[in-house]
Length: 152
Image (tube, rainbow, N blue to C red; front, side, top):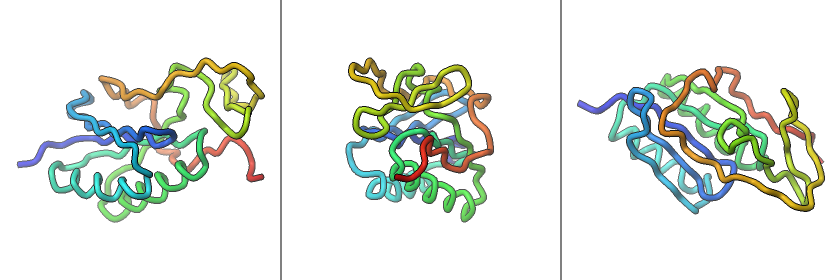
Protein backbone atom coordinates (compact mmCIF):
# COMPACT_ATOMS: atom_id res chain seq x y z
CA UNK A 1 0.00 0.00 0.00
CA UNK A 2 1.51 3.37 -0.99
CA UNK A 3 2.42 5.98 1.61
CA UNK A 4 0.32 9.11 1.98
CA UNK A 5 2.50 12.14 1.30
CA UNK A 6 2.45 15.84 0.52
CA UNK A 7 4.57 17.29 -2.29
CA UNK A 8 6.20 20.72 -2.02
CA UNK A 9 7.46 22.42 -5.20
CA UNK A 10 9.99 25.26 -5.33
CA UNK A 11 10.12 26.21 -9.00
CA UNK A 12 11.04 29.92 -8.84
CA UNK A 13 14.73 29.47 -9.52
CA UNK A 14 17.25 26.89 -10.57
CA UNK A 15 17.61 24.25 -9.36
CA UNK A 16 14.00 23.16 -9.10
CA UNK A 17 13.33 21.54 -5.71
CA UNK A 18 10.60 19.07 -4.82
CA UNK A 19 10.13 17.73 -1.32
CA UNK A 20 8.20 14.61 -0.38
CA UNK A 21 6.72 14.88 3.10
CA UNK A 22 5.18 12.14 5.22
CA UNK A 23 3.50 13.36 8.41
CA UNK A 24 5.01 16.82 7.76
CA UNK A 25 8.57 15.42 7.71
CA UNK A 26 10.83 15.48 4.66
CA UNK A 27 11.42 11.87 3.55
CA UNK A 28 12.76 12.47 0.04
CA UNK A 29 13.80 15.32 -2.21
CA UNK A 30 14.34 15.83 -5.91
CA UNK A 31 16.69 18.45 -7.32
CA UNK A 32 16.67 19.22 -11.03
CA UNK A 33 18.41 21.73 -13.28
CA UNK A 34 15.87 21.00 -16.05
CA UNK A 35 13.13 23.44 -17.05
CA UNK A 36 9.95 23.16 -14.99
CA UNK A 37 7.88 22.57 -18.11
CA UNK A 38 10.04 19.57 -19.03
CA UNK A 39 10.51 17.94 -15.65
CA UNK A 40 7.28 18.56 -13.68
CA UNK A 41 5.07 16.17 -15.69
CA UNK A 42 7.59 13.35 -15.42
CA UNK A 43 8.24 13.80 -11.70
CA UNK A 44 4.57 14.15 -10.78
CA UNK A 45 3.71 11.04 -12.81
CA UNK A 46 6.38 9.09 -10.90
CA UNK A 47 5.07 10.42 -7.57
CA UNK A 48 1.47 9.51 -8.45
CA UNK A 49 2.60 5.95 -9.21
CA UNK A 50 4.65 5.65 -6.02
CA UNK A 51 2.53 7.50 -3.41
CA UNK A 52 -0.97 8.56 -2.47
CA UNK A 53 -0.71 12.34 -2.61
CA UNK A 54 -2.72 14.21 0.02
CA UNK A 55 -1.65 17.77 -0.79
CA UNK A 56 0.26 19.86 -3.31
CA UNK A 57 2.22 22.87 -2.04
CA UNK A 58 4.08 25.49 -4.06
CA UNK A 59 5.50 29.01 -3.94
CA UNK A 60 3.20 31.37 -5.82
CA UNK A 61 5.65 34.27 -6.00
CA UNK A 62 7.21 36.63 -6.29
CA UNK A 63 9.79 35.48 -8.80
CA UNK A 64 10.04 34.43 -12.41
CA UNK A 65 6.68 35.06 -14.09
CA UNK A 66 7.12 32.07 -16.38
CA UNK A 67 8.10 29.72 -13.54
CA UNK A 68 5.09 30.84 -11.51
CA UNK A 69 2.70 30.40 -14.44
CA UNK A 70 4.00 26.95 -15.37
CA UNK A 71 3.89 25.67 -11.79
CA UNK A 72 0.44 27.10 -11.14
CA UNK A 73 -1.19 25.85 -14.34
CA UNK A 74 0.36 22.40 -14.02
CA UNK A 75 -0.32 21.94 -10.29
CA UNK A 76 -3.83 23.43 -10.51
CA UNK A 77 -4.63 20.98 -13.32
CA UNK A 78 -3.37 18.02 -11.25
CA UNK A 79 -5.29 19.36 -8.26
CA UNK A 80 -8.55 19.43 -10.24
CA UNK A 81 -8.03 16.15 -12.13
CA UNK A 82 -6.92 14.12 -9.10
CA UNK A 83 -8.97 16.01 -6.47
CA UNK A 84 -5.85 16.92 -4.47
CA UNK A 85 -5.90 20.24 -2.60
CA UNK A 86 -3.40 22.89 -3.75
CA UNK A 87 -1.82 25.29 -1.25
CA UNK A 88 0.53 28.23 -1.76
CA UNK A 89 2.96 30.37 0.18
CA UNK A 90 5.01 33.40 -0.70
CA UNK A 91 8.62 32.72 -1.55
CA UNK A 92 10.13 34.81 1.24
CA UNK A 93 9.11 32.13 3.75
CA UNK A 94 11.65 29.76 2.20
CA UNK A 95 14.73 31.89 1.51
CA UNK A 96 15.20 33.58 4.89
CA UNK A 97 13.40 36.70 3.60
CA UNK A 98 16.26 37.62 1.27
CA UNK A 99 15.84 39.55 -2.02
CA UNK A 100 14.43 37.66 -5.01
CA UNK A 101 15.53 38.53 -8.54
CA UNK A 102 12.90 40.42 -10.55
CA UNK A 103 14.51 41.88 -13.71
CA UNK A 104 17.81 43.61 -14.37
CA UNK A 105 18.98 45.09 -11.08
CA UNK A 106 15.45 45.05 -9.64
CA UNK A 107 14.75 42.67 -6.80
CA UNK A 108 11.63 41.81 -4.85
CA UNK A 109 11.99 42.62 -1.15
CA UNK A 110 9.56 42.18 1.72
CA UNK A 111 9.33 45.17 4.00
CA UNK A 112 6.98 44.42 6.85
CA UNK A 113 3.93 42.88 5.23
CA UNK A 114 4.48 44.55 1.83
CA UNK A 115 6.34 43.18 -1.16
CA UNK A 116 8.08 45.85 -3.24
CA UNK A 117 10.74 46.06 -5.91
CA UNK A 118 14.03 47.83 -5.25
CA UNK A 119 17.10 48.45 -7.35
CA UNK A 120 19.99 46.71 -5.62
CA UNK A 121 23.64 46.90 -6.66
CA UNK A 122 24.99 44.39 -4.15
CA UNK A 123 22.73 41.49 -3.33
CA UNK A 124 23.11 39.13 -0.43
CA UNK A 125 20.56 36.48 -1.26
CA UNK A 126 19.90 33.06 0.19
CA UNK A 127 19.00 30.07 -1.98
CA UNK A 128 15.62 28.47 -1.53
CA UNK A 129 15.59 25.43 0.73
CA UNK A 130 13.19 22.62 1.45
CA UNK A 131 12.37 22.65 5.16
CA UNK A 132 12.86 19.44 7.13
CA UNK A 133 9.35 19.93 8.55
CA UNK A 134 6.51 21.29 6.41
CA UNK A 135 4.54 23.86 8.42
CA UNK A 136 1.01 23.99 7.05
CA UNK A 137 0.47 27.35 8.77
CA UNK A 138 2.82 28.95 6.17
CA UNK A 139 0.44 27.98 3.35
CA UNK A 140 -3.10 28.87 2.38
CA UNK A 141 -5.72 27.98 -0.22
CA UNK A 142 -5.34 31.39 -1.90
CA UNK A 143 -3.11 29.75 -4.47
CA UNK A 144 -3.33 32.03 -7.52
CA UNK A 145 -0.01 33.44 -8.73
CA UNK A 146 1.38 36.52 -7.01
CA UNK A 147 3.48 38.23 -9.65
CA UNK A 148 4.61 41.20 -7.55
CA UNK A 149 4.83 43.67 -10.40
CA UNK A 150 2.66 44.35 -13.41
CA UNK A 151 3.43 43.13 -16.89
CA UNK A 152 5.92 45.26 -18.79
